[in-house]
Structures are given as C-alpha cells and as structure tokens.
Length: 350
Ligand code: F6P
Image 1 (cartoon, rainbow, N blue to C red):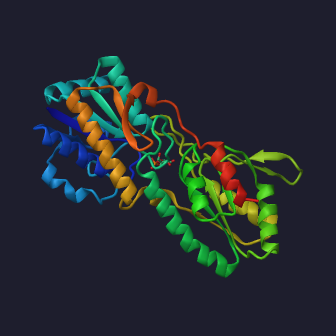
Image 2: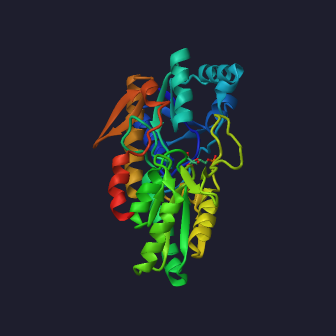
Image 3: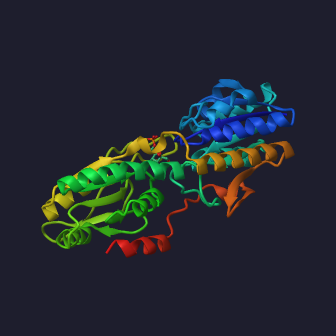
C-alpha cells in the first residue's frame, strides 16, 4: 500500500508525532508513505518527500511540521482539484491521510463525497475547537506555553503594580484563554462565547487592588466579545478584526484586541496597564508528553484505517479511546467552550 500524508492550516506541536506514527504503521504492514509538502499546495503541485520509519524517530520532539503547511484551498478552482486527482493516480497512491483543522479536513471530506477519494482525517489545532473529538493535540502544549509566559509576566506585573492583559489565540473559541486563565489564576477571562462588559472587569480589578492584590492578570481571546460604556453611557463593541484580511478559506485575521482592552482598563481604572500579544509563540515549541502520546495514537489509528481501506473517516479521541467518525460529521461545526466551564472559572473571577 502507498499512502500519502499532508499537514494543512496553522501548524501545531505534535504534527510530527502523527506523521511518524502513520509512517511506522504503514511500514510495519509492508507499505510505504510519502509526504506532500505544504498541505494541499503539495498535493496540487505533486511536491513530496519519501518518508522512512527509521528516519522519523528524531522528529517526535520537534515542533511544527517537517512537511511544511499552508492554507491553500484547492476548492477555489476546479482545475486544482483535478490536479490532486491526477497526481494521486499518477503516483499510484492508495490513500491520503490529511492532518489538519476544519478547513483542511473540510477539503478531505469534500474529496471523499465528490470523488470517493480515499481520504482519512486527523484532527489538529491549538484552538481545541473541533467537534467530534474530546481534545486536539497541540492544545496542551499551547496551554503550557501560555502558562509559562504568564508565570513570568506575573512577577514583573507584581513588582510594578501593573495590570497585564494577555491576548491569546483561538479564533472564535475561548478554550485557550479560559483554560490558561484558570491555570494562571487570572483576574478576568474574556472569551467569544460570553459577552464581557469591560466596566465590570474594571470594578473588579479596582476592588481587588483595594483589598490587597496590587497587580492584575487578564487573559483575553483574540476573538472575544467585549463591550464597554463610552463617555455618553452608550454601550459599544470592540472590533476584533482590525486588519480586515482573510485567508484562502475566508477566515478573518484576528488580533489587536489586547491593546484595546489594555487602553480601556487604563483609562477607566487609572491603573498602569500593559498588553502582551502571545501570537505565534502559542503554536511553537516541542510538544508536551500528552500531545506526543495523543498525536502518536491518532497517527497509528489513521494508518490502520488506511490499511483497512476504511475511508472518509476521521480519527478522534473519545474519553480514553481513539475511534473513527465519519469525516462529514466531524467538519463544519465549530466546538465552542461550554459555558459550564466558565461557570467553574467564575468562582475565581468575582
Ligand atoms: O487556528 C490556529 C490559529 O493559530 C488561530 O488561533 C489563529 O487565529 C490563526 O491560526 C492564525 O493564523 P495565521 O498563522 O495564518 O495568521
């Protein structure tokens, strides 16, 4: 059996763990694996590398993806889809393992539906916002990165009696912000799923200062829903997409809300407030043990699905087990942060 794999969308720690596991599982069964370079872009151009089990042990601790990634969308042009189908045939491939988020897996699912293309999906994202799987690999490493950064920010915030606003990634889901906020004892957590009135946060920060906590940590999602009262008492909403740029899949580029939040807090409380945008730091670095193991298990099961010719499926974590779910069910539905979690975090936010 000849299997191809590719990694698409924003990179995340433990992509290489999945690649290694697919290669090993296929090789153990006497097959071979190639890797298309830079996501769907490589599947279109045919650019690829040969992957050998004995050369992939070293990649397990490595962040990012050895194959490179892109946000190329072949469905923008029918000719690009035909190129993929042509390459698949010409290279005598039997299966394609697509490792990606909703956009990459959405393409895999369409290829399966439209052309019975032999695809298998592996869910990845630091955002943890994919439905049909309990957790995505990359999320845990990302949380540890945010936690480490905020532990450092805390000491300087405390020394200077400042408030530090930490802007986290996560698009329209607040998983990273809320989980890391809980892990760092944040004073306020602002996420897309629940509206925050900044005036309430300012009251809380002032009250905490009065009762002895001389600094503050606020975690805010890049896509948070935040309102504030202007000088005339009108409620206004902060703009989360100031750049107005979109990617190939139509996702709007977020970023910049941390600065707006910090300025408002400073203005409304009179307390010196700074912002730190963690940005792509959150996607980098060596994967945590949890992510290495999850990525490896998903990769083994994706390889086994390929060997069984059980296509059109995505491997997923359900409780302790790895299961296969139909790709079509798994894509197109963002999984936002459950409000119950915010309720638990809320004990520390008042
Ligand atoms: O989906 C992962 C993610 O890191 C989001 O949290 C973020 O909004 C986006 O990708 C950034 O993408 P890019 O690196 O293409 O700007």
